[in-house]
Length: 493
Length: 103
Image (tube, rainbow over all chains, first blue to last red; front, top):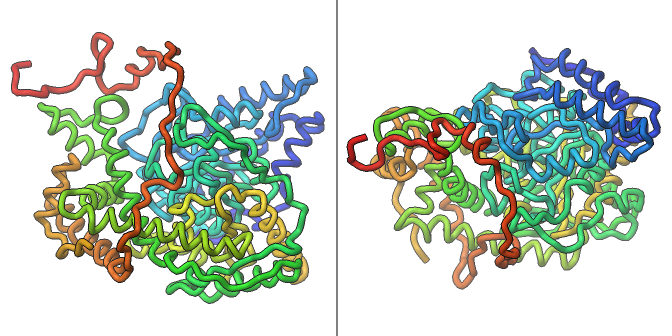
């Protein structure tokens, strides 16, 4: 079962190249789509990146893009680019499950704003990707429909919860993918699969039509094979939406604006608490140090910085996120949509529907959240966690007085084996220790593949920025991508 | 500052399961008691942190109320929405008996 499904560094077209070819008529959107569908057919049974491949809808969309090009119309910024959608984003008439039994068979009556924006920009939605049920997990093993495997080594997990989206891009099933990040669910799987993944500033991307997990933390963001492709996708999905009351209505920072600007003069802080944290593997730390050196070589002023409260982020998160989830998931009661377990009275129907419809991790988090919010425990758990959240925001603010961006690992280790952490929820939770602080603060953060660990699997280096700092964050990520590529060429890999 | 309560008991877990409308088996209760206990034990590490006088953060953005003009706009199509319900009747969601009345 182990071994990659394809050359780990295949000569594949970037999303930007695909869009250029389609716009100029060099290649049809249909031809692009069929090549990706062929890749899916060849390897999907082993990877299981998708809950549902949208063959008919994708073919119709690609044909529509081709007609636009033939008519001399602009097919849009993403015209003809195949994109995979995490299966917690509502797609009108297309099954949307959150990888949960409780929503199996449900076809939403509307599109999420992000899905509509992608369609308007000409992207070809190719399928709905697998996730940990309701985005609760770090390995995609919590899916009711079976795990996704890491395309680079099928014995390992792709990370989670957006494991299907990360695997789809890594396997070449789609040029781009969209995921969601509540505590690291874009960045962690992107790092483990060797692709770029980004969580935007809270409020920049509309959550309308995203099935809620923890509303004060959830953000939708891009997966791509390159930094420039991720920037292209972010620039399309970001922007104000009147349907989301938490959507920012100021100007949106451009991710693409300064990709070529280098790092000269930028102030980069390596976060001591993330890089020196317990359980961060030595090979991962070594890559972070090399990334810092690469930025210094490019003219950045690099120093170590302390964000003391960051070490309490994990604890704070695992009280706040379940508390919000316990409230958000109260709506799955067998009345309005999805699965119902028939019973004689309504209370029994609720309790039996939820018992049969939710998997163990979702139940665990609902229980944890309900407990943390219940009378007598609220102050000790939820209240304290919210105060820690304030401290994290303060400590980041202090760090950003002296630095433009921060740097750290994305994950404690490279991709682990399937089954390695399923028996111990707490061990699985620790996978998110480096990514959670940005969610609690509402800040943007992204991961860039930066060489490999001792096991040959990819390592992700994380770039963190203050709220609305997307432009400089992508600028630094592009420098790291260039440095990592140059080193790979230099070593003959 | 409130102190962290004693380790969660099986009775606590059963109580929370009732509040959360989750029909759990005895086996589930045992397992969740142990696993939730471990997570809550880990949560004790924040006890060391002095948070006296620190305001809580419920949300990363300064939230304000969002208003829109009071205009009639199209909503989701009722039939399309009801078609996704487990049971519907006469333009409404159909549910089992709620009170003790005869159906």
